[in-house]
Image (tube, rainbow, N blue to C red):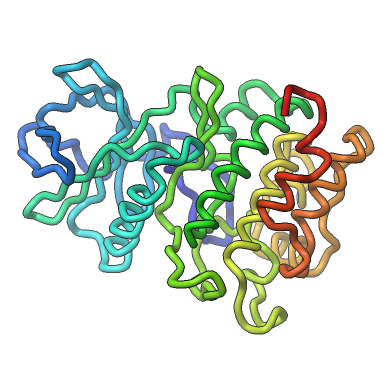
Length: 314
């Protein structure tokens, strides 16, 4: 659940919330049949705040009036195009399948109104995203990066084992809470593979974190392996958290399409600074292999020396 989604476009500068406007109001009286056995309706939820926008809808922080429990509610408007609706239904299907994974935001139910609006009720992560944490607290230490990496990898290992490709791993799509939990969110462009070796052909996700073969599939046999592409995005995410800025750009540089294409497709992968330990430098290098077949899998990465350092008992 990206709190603010940035889709494929030539320019990537973020917009502040004040520059955005809600797409529609949260329904306050409509009764919506839940997908589970709990008799929850939209009327039972009190809107507290807007968390963000994207993927054809709006994400709200809501409170269940009867229990005071807090949730995140994603409402996808009824006048969306067929592809956006199809993605929303895929997101619901994936969240259902991943409900037992502690490193994926928990799914609490979904609703559909007769007019076609979809609502997805999810776990509320009160710590925001890693993107917010980086902007607020600055660069991550290796110990903190280790904890984040382990959680994301465990989540990706679960998803990949269930033939789910996320396709939009980035700091803004990894959420945290005050209990210290780190969870993967926003499955709006994810794909449920029919079998392990199926290739992903659609061009979706956030372009800055796309792997080289997604930018230029012809150079890699005309398609890309979604599981390997997730590992590239994961590596870039960790790199950014450690150095404090997007790896292919200088601090404060505003990217454009040409810069991204040149940096990702034609330049060598970025290397971690000397301040990083040898284990971390090698760990990131294993994620950022330009040839997708050479990137390590989640299982290999979980057994990498960096993941067995004595930051905590592992």
